[in-house]
Amino acid sequence: MRSTRLIVLSCATLTVVACTNPRVNANITQQLSDAAAEINGLRNDLAQVQNDLDSLRTVVVKQDSTISRLAAVNNIPISR
Image (cartoon, rainbow, N blue to C red; front, side, top):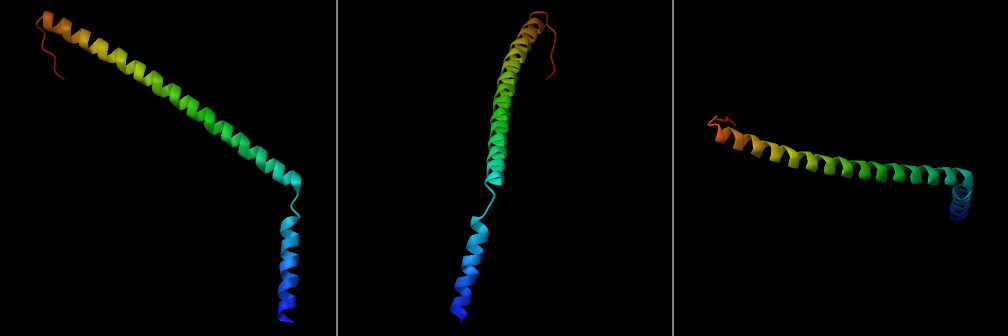
């Protein structure tokens, strides 16, 4: 009697789980795909920002060295 109930409950649970709507699964898959595309876009944007920052650092270093040289030639002390 007890094993029969277990089998019936297992079959009922399996039936409920197996009867998911394919449209819902497709929508979830599409949303996950869209989220992955957005994350990849953010990664690309972050990489571009990092490249821009590195470029700006290079420019600042060049300007800093130029200012230091001009100050040294004109005997102007620079506090850092």
